[in-house]
Image 1 (cartoon, rainbow, N blue to C red):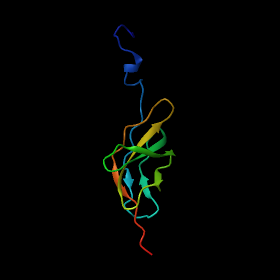
Image 2 (image 1 turned 180 degrees about the horizontal axis):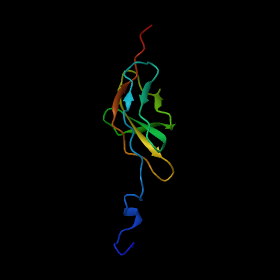
Image 3 (image 1 turned 45 degrees about the vertical axis):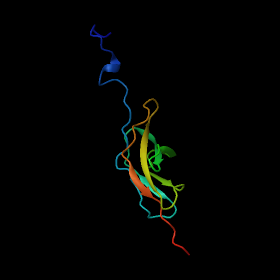
Image 4 (image 1 turned 90 degrees about the horizontal axis):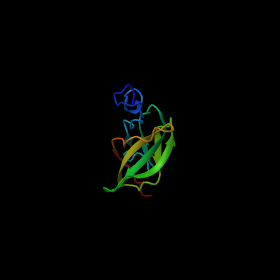
Length: 116
């Protein structure tokens, strides 16, 4: 106890553990490329890397990649052409600060190649 009040340093809002915030501005391309879906986001202060997730047809989010900070783009080359996917990103903090919550999601689509 500090000063007999029962408060500890971990309960002090100026001391305890701080996680990183989720990335803002997640955008996924909408069919502009037949090779990939480009997923972009805003930088998160204190992030050392980002984990990118894809959800297909109402299933759970599955991690599809990790990028080091300060990179803010991931190219999903494994997305199936013509299928809408839902993308979200989580920031990974410096050692000991854990991972953020999921970002807001955004739909993305890999384009379909024109017949030859």
